[in-house]
Amino acid sequence: MTDLVAIARSLMAPGKGILAADESVHTATARLADYGISTSADMRRQFRDLFIGAEGIEQYLSGIILFSETLLQKGSDKKLFPKSLVARGIFPGIKVDLGTEPFPESSHELITQGLLDLPERLMQYKKQGAVFTKWRAVIRIDGDDLPTNVALHENAKRLASYAKEVQSAGLVPILEPEILLEGKHSRIRARAVIEEMFQTLFSVLAEHSVDRASIIVKTSMALSGSASGKKDTPEEVAEDTVAALVASVPPQVAGIVFLSGGQTPDQATANLAAITRRANEAGAPWPLTFSFARALQDEALEVWKGKEENVPAARSAFLARLAKVSAALSSM
Ligand code: 13P
Figure 1 (cartoon, rainbow, N blue to C red):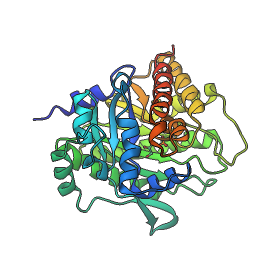
Figure 2 (tube, rainbow, N blue to C red; figure 1 turned 90 degrees about the horizontal axis):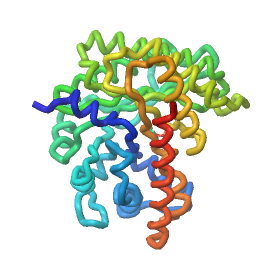
Figure 3 (cartoon, helix red, strand yellow; figure 1 turned 30 degrees about the vertical axis):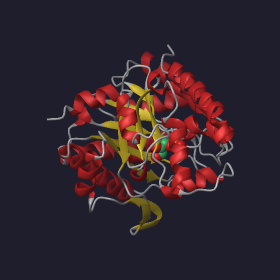
């Protein structure tokens, strides 16, 4: 039997983190368009290869979350991406949710889809080399009106069903209820919503008898909304993020990882360093690390622009950011 706790703990290895390279076709198309790159299946393959094929990433990455299309694609070394990762001691993961749709009971909120054929897809992803998975729920804050309890609860139920299926299939689940940065809300409101979401989630996980020791939680940092006009200091972010997590995430989980959520690479890195320091001071019980997409990829994409001749310089930019983010994990 697969030792899920051991895999989850290895994903949280000191000094290492997880790259989220799991943008759906739709999101990857939009992301590449931001850099003037028009997309095709092969352009997306080159986009993944830019990061996966970079020499030396195993020093900083314990895992990479892939998208289903990428599991079947090959890098310029002619190896399937999951095989090339395993050869370097990096765990291949897979995003298994199928995106969001409007929630019928509260039309301004979103609900995540993908449970119906999940067991069959998990078998397939496992055969294709995935050892861990991710499911993302999306939580929007709007004043005191959103999120509604019913949307928090429905997203928590789906995260719990997902986690249960994934553990039965012998894979590690990452549960990601993302609190969106977009909005006018205060950092204190974001902190309260993070806390409420995780309290709801862990009570539903207990009802579904999900094993906490082999789950990883992926969270937003507590930040003032992007339209609030407020710029938080790393110390403020750290104080509220750690407080929310200490109040709501049980010590048994294998670890907590952070998404970057639209922060600049420097902001996400500085906030991660402050969170690490604060968590150490507070004696927080779980290991922490990063699981960024944009904050790890943006600088490299800016250099790459979809051009073969820019690959070495783009990879250097990626490795430089990885080194900074990894250094943030040893902030004391
Ligand atoms: P960002 O770091 O760009 O927020 O992406 C992380 C992620 O996995 C979102 O689902």
